[in-house]
Amino acid sequence: MQTQTLFQLCRTGYIALVLLLSGYFIQLGLSGTYSFAFTALWIIPLLLPLKGIIQGNPYTFAWASFILCLYELHALTNLWVADNGFTFAVIETVLISLLLIGFPYYARFRGRELGLGLKKKKNQE
Image (cartoon, rainbow, N blue to C red; front, side, top):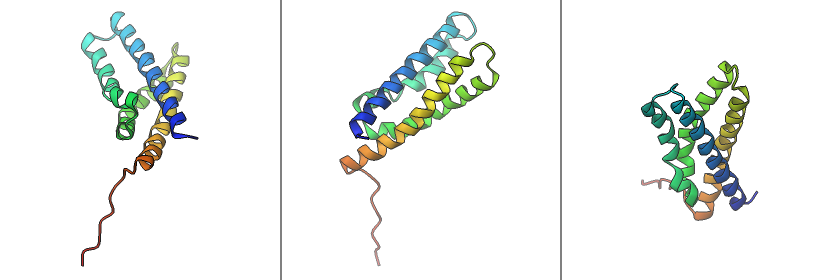
């Protein structure tokens, strides 16, 4: 798979996730289930890597996976306890799981293309 194709898939999946979860949490905030502050606490971390993901920065894709882990926990918990929102929980879980696979791969392949990486330590004897 080419890096550009992986980038497009990851970016599209991330934007879909932002829209899906923003709509979900805003709906819960408007219905009175969550307060405005609690809704914002769920949405803001998801928006932090937005600029770097849209630009295709491999460093952003690498650290954004850590943020996605929080939402994966939410998705798996939702999947376990959901009575009426089971379909939403499955979609959320699958989407985040795919992003947790795609983000590190894109960061790795794009980083290699750009010559980025950890520098090896020279032996100084």
